[in-house]
Image (tube, rainbow, N blue to C red; front, side, top):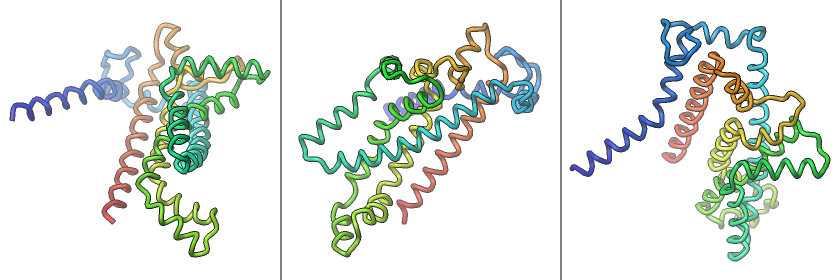
Length: 263
């Protein structure tokens, strides 16, 4: 009984430490105070001010860049990672272990090392840095996470289903599209969401591959804003909106996954 109470208390303390900063940001997004921690009364002024392009044009541009880069990178890395996972799964045991180890290196490697490596690669190839290099960089570090998300679904799949589809006259492409993809779809969705979150959150890789053309993402905007001596108050409602949207997407995905398991 004591152990159970201790475990529950530990869990609630851990959740409190994880989510209290987010809760504080959400609470103070409903006040006009410029400094976080000063409550000047309930107000939605920061939310209305956030979407006035004439006031925060650069912030909205950074948000648009972040979202578009994240969507492109997550979509491409999901496709590449899913195909790679299928190929890795069908390798022999020794080759499977070797490729899985290679796939884990970018995940275990520090973001700053990945950023510097990609920066040197683009410089050596003479590629001008900007939007395209940021997208390529995000695809590079997101793809291994998609592979790790899809592989467990392939292990759970009955391999005889694919063979049965081929025996019944389906082509390999048809069997892939109608048999394998539906089986690994939950893993692909999880990989997409993980890649999307990692891309939105990334700073180290982005700052090394963004170049000097004036391109900004949310992470680089917040970094530059903090160096000026403070953060734009409108970042509080923006952070709250992003958190709520991601939370809603996760709840919908988990709800649909739960219904699929029951069926």
